[in-house]
Length: 168
Image 1 (tube, one colour):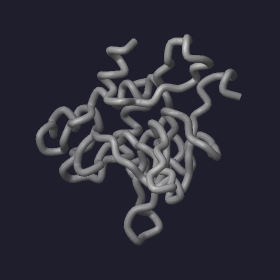
Image 2 (tube, helix red, strand yellow):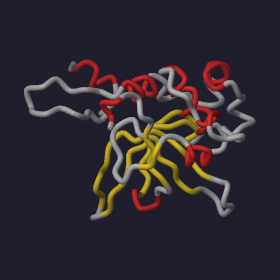
Image 3 (cartoon, one colour):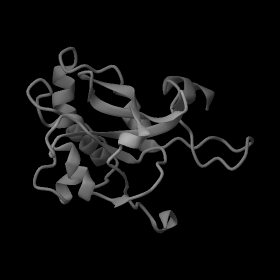
Image 4 (cartoon, helix red, strand yellow):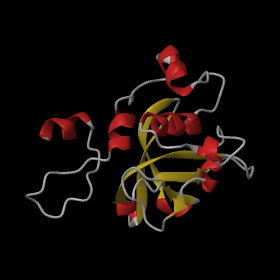
């Protein structure tokens, strides 16, 4: 299990009840982490295959989240929006939760227009100078698949998909 943690570059683990339990790594985060470092120019063809859009010509954060969800047979924002390439299409996806868990989808504002935004997968929280930041794994973060910190207070919504009755 140690090898997996190293490969994920410090990905968060969740749902371990005590220190002797093996860590449970969110499968969505694990899959998304396999693309960390892909850039829209250096890995353009690979990303086009994953995303279904050209990352050089399209804002692709929502396309990346939808692609990763599809790899896990989880319906994406195309099931709830006519504009699944918009980050804010995820505002109608899944259900809102007050606090994130690894693998949750987090929507942030971007720009000065109400339709603009950014979306990615929550990995874990950090406290920096007394403020909470979310470590987000997403696409189109500095034109690549990467981890980046976002102020928790700026999150528009934290969304979770109900995958089983155990999640209730």
